[in-house]
Image 1 (cartoon, helix red, strand yellow):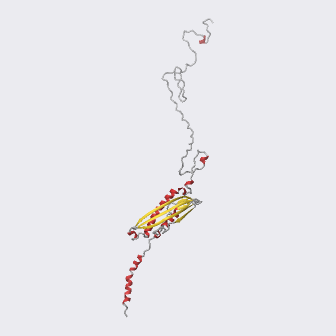
Image 2: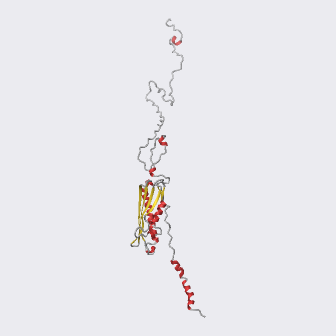
Image 3: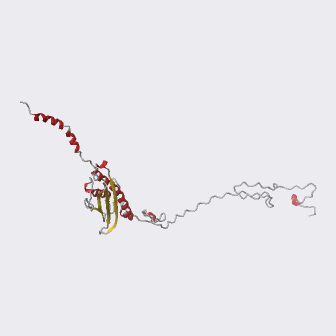
Length: 301
């Protein structure tokens, strides 16, 4: 009994269909993976408050025509992550509120994506009175081509790209506004706020004011300078003796120049009288008693 033609063609059709199976599997490629947006590698802004709350008013669809919900990381979610990573409560009282006012992506004519982010940060006292605030606004336009989007301007890759660009701008803008408008509420790593730094005038060395620890001021006001310590007068240097003046003419009283006035100089030699003794008279001169010591008899005495 011969097999039918239909049964004979079935193996041939299976062989022809097998090479097409890998092609069909390749057409269903998995979607690309997008890295999560984190900002903990950036400087942390420490606020002198006890709590920080986040209010999200920019959820996807809050603006008509918003496409942010189709992004791998919606813009409002990226803003919440930024506030969590970069804002820290470092005080004991008061509070701060980070509010997302808008986080939208719109599809404009011509295959252009337009993104917008608006946030503000309020700081309040323990009795809920507003003490300060800072605002940050970002606008971005992203134009795609048919080659990088596959003919779809609002593809996940393009939505991720414009969100990432807006977040780079927002991190810079928010930090600038906080440091400019909320500088008195920032706390450094040592826990010191600019408003807590005081100025103290230094006293004289050894005074009680100088013994107390002084705190430097970031912006010291011009004050009178402390008087400087009076230094003890230095001992005068020994005067160099002036050379002795030699008179040009002999002195009538001291022909040899007189006694030496400088103890360091050697005294000049003096002319001495003849050695003491008896005087001898010339021959033929009458002698007297005064000269010889004998009594004078020439006058009959």
